[in-house]
Image (tube, rainbow, N blue to C red):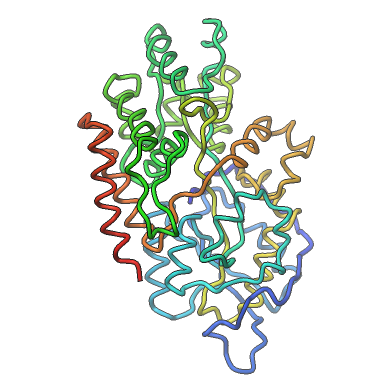
Length: 424
């Protein structure tokens, strides 16, 4: 879950009131209570303070159901840990949880969030792939709030000077990164290769873009030991071994990689669309000199991992109906528009990607829509945190020690199988 946003002020927005969205009353609901009252929204740190004004819109029209915002740390790992501490305590401190998309399965399997009534939300208006991130065991356990897809930032000026088009395949990217970048004294390609959640995303995208997978059947089956996974992870391992992925990139998270591209030190960068604001800003060395396209793959367009976050109702919420109504409000069209214009986060509603005014303001929206529609969720598992630790640790070892793709997928499969056996 990443909260990197452009600052902005919110206006009052007419609230969307939907009742009956909870499939069943939450355990913490007091007898005789109608499920309504003051609520608390827990989220990762809101770095640019856009959520407060959005919630003022709700509070202005719901004086008896006011929402309080609880900001947890910026780091996804720390936010996850603090949420788990609260959820395991059964104190019902939170009502609505803004959770990273892969946590939905984990929280649902543990019984920490309540299933929701699909009919209570206009899911048909959402980008189709994002709805899948909010389900577990064929039930809706959350509602998508923001989405995301990895994109390829490239130096448009350099490729034009060389008479080249942006790469659509890995062989094209590798050739350009290996031969063109050195001529300009810059690195070829970077993503987020430090061993943290970002590396799990980059690993998953590489495997998916080669036609493979990591887990199946909600985490019960390990599928990573395949020729496709070897090809996908091999692309990254080879880049680190041959140097067109700079060694420094093995220490990058999102911001470090953005700064490297923004400072003119990279030919290609995989990052989330949030980076557009900084890369095109007045302090950028490459403002006006870059472009954004969907990620390349093994032999054609690649597959991004779906990023973003979902909104869920704490199973111990004291006011689950108010919590569900707040989720409906935050996913309504007027608020989703502000999520983009004031929060710089990709919205989940399809119609906003075709809005001419928004496309003029955010020219990457059509390419982002293409990427989201072709994207896939991270591996689903009730033990996702452990799955992620394995994927990132194994791949980072392989990239730093130049291990073979075959040995890498064998080790990854072995360690993931041990996690899968813990199910239930």
